[in-house]
Image (cartoon, rainbow, N blue to C red; front, side, top):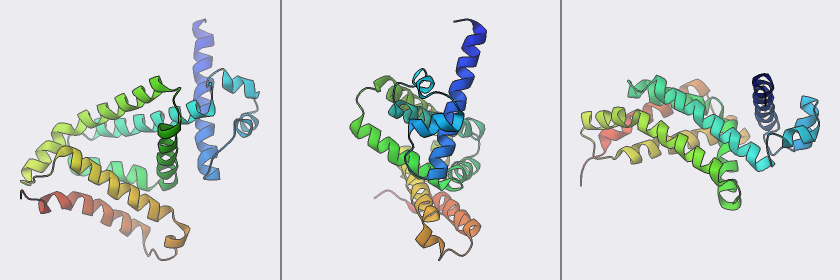
Length: 201
């Protein structure tokens, strides 16, 4: 494949992924490759030149999202408070994306057996993201004389973030939410305050 054709191939793949993410978030549910092809004004077979299945397309969207989170880790790996706030904001301000991609990943993890290499890439990117902030997080916990492990603290941040995303994305709970901005700030502050409450038994 010539360099020009290869570049066009990559650009078309990026357009397919971008449109798939847009449709997924607009519909707030599963999409079909026929819908995707129609929106892009291309043949369905063209999509199959880039993705063997819809599951592969979804998994590549999840990897793309994880790479965005990796960039946040690289950018803010010198300041834990900025990192935590940026990580949580990325997820909470796009709560429907956070929830949908998590649900899809759970489904694929349980049911998909043909995408081993892509799962390995996902876990590699995720591990790189954690390594990027490991020292910073360790220093933060030590400064608070916290007995909490790095893994537990980062898991806690994810739990708070995902729970907040569920609430912020809920039609029912949105009716009783006063200020979304104040609530988001409260969740971020909660994630940053918790470690100093942990002590060795």
